[in-house]
Length: 593
Image (cartoon, rainbow, N blue to C red):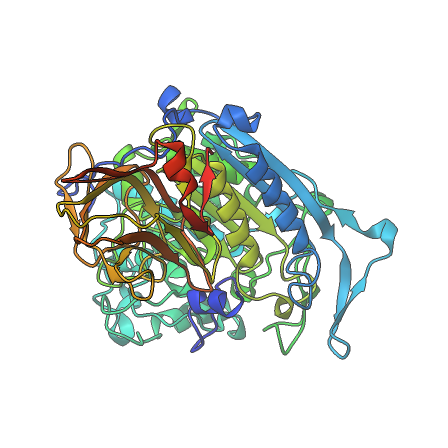
């Protein structure tokens, strides 16, 4: 299975936590640029990729180095078995690939011994290390290619976003699916359950009958449920309206125009030495007894469908995926070739699942998913994962991209759970994008640790004259609801603390009140002006308190230029070294990024 939940089991996000229509009414505007003053995209709106330094990419090299060292740690017990036998890591910003690193082995095990729960290794001379151009079975990342092909047909008027699937495939309308729309297939709101064993049917026609006769488990449009059947159905629609097979569509509409030479269905036998092996596929953990799967699609249903399927089956390498990502960040163009109009790309980066908070989804792309996007996650961050250990994350806010390709089902799928390597890599790439202080050389930074409370406490102030007000610059991006930054005050020496309401503002927008004295979630990754009226007290103590849960974090919080004034004058000014020296920082630290 390339999906990350079994039928009737937990969702993909729950599994991760356990381990750690177009041309009409839609007019969309891009979000503001990211935190760096001179993002690479500002210099070149449609860059093509080349290798270069972290500095050229506008990234901090120390965090890219940590991305690699943390990724290498997952080659060891994670917590019992390695999360993957090896991986290829690629990270960049703008037109620069600043990190492209293979680690571990592409082929290590020839079998899995279920009695001892160990991998049976190939002799050392027959093992194959990872290389920059190692090809991977992308598993469910394949869904992105099918989605792009569908959006192309929507753009051309051959497919209707809100059209009923049964209008193209009459047999699809059986068993209560007559009202399912193309959009619902692309956003996993059709009502399909996660998967069914198509491979158990003896013929292709019988497999299609299973799809036609499958009844929704929820009424279409009423719930989010990630399902391979959505993209399998979309494949059938595309093949019907174009008269071409999905692999032909992939070649003619995406890989050839973009020059993706290592991306295809059913790679030839000559590619096998350069492909990462997957699983020793045997029952009961696999639906089919196939032995070591290497150079053929891992997903059982895709295998039964001849290796060409809408939900799985595409093989590719890190560079090709980066080119695809750069194409979408460019608004659908790469070099001289355009595969989508900018408006079409906007649909892929726009949440259609606003009725299902936490399950944000564009057309084909998942959005704002901290469980594998980590601190890269914003409402516009788009990506997808694959069951074999693959992932692609694109952040238009900072114009950055991350590819993590691992063979995490090698030698068996039960050796890994969750998405910790993806989260760690995304956290480091997010930290590599600098946040420049609002003024001066440094700003106070909360850090990005999980399961922590970090406090930044000002010295006791005499605010008894009244009219005291705190002013500062504030930058915050946290995991929504779970991680919170609070402004608090104490008038009894720290024995008790009360929330301090405040207001944030930025040019061009109305001021935003925060009556609870807290912020959480995404605030645009830009600096805001912050003001707070303070209680009158002789021994007033103020603190910023940042709390995180045990799972994921956002990019963190920054505070800069704190100044407290009252009717009696300036009570605190961070610009005065003596005042700054009296600040008590627990978990916060000065950062120049």
